Length: 112
Image (tube, helix red, strand yellow):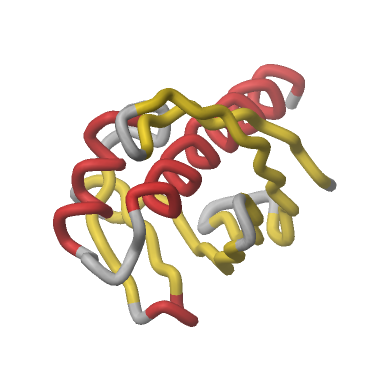
């Protein structure tokens, strides 16, 4: 299954919009997705553990705590601050993808 989403960010002092796409590979926790946006691609594993939420991006050697998947601001700050190898655009693309994934999860839980 594929989901489209829109990102909004400020780069070089101007506001920009760009499209992203999520391919859901595993539809239960831990979720496994591919995210593509602005010429970058990320294989992401995310889910819950005993004390909260997490994200792993194995091909980027990234692993971190997350707030709720819907908390775009906190998750963006966590990724951008902890992993300088991620550009601002990439961190925004991932945080917006997590929000979209959360919407999908909420809909499937309601239907289930």
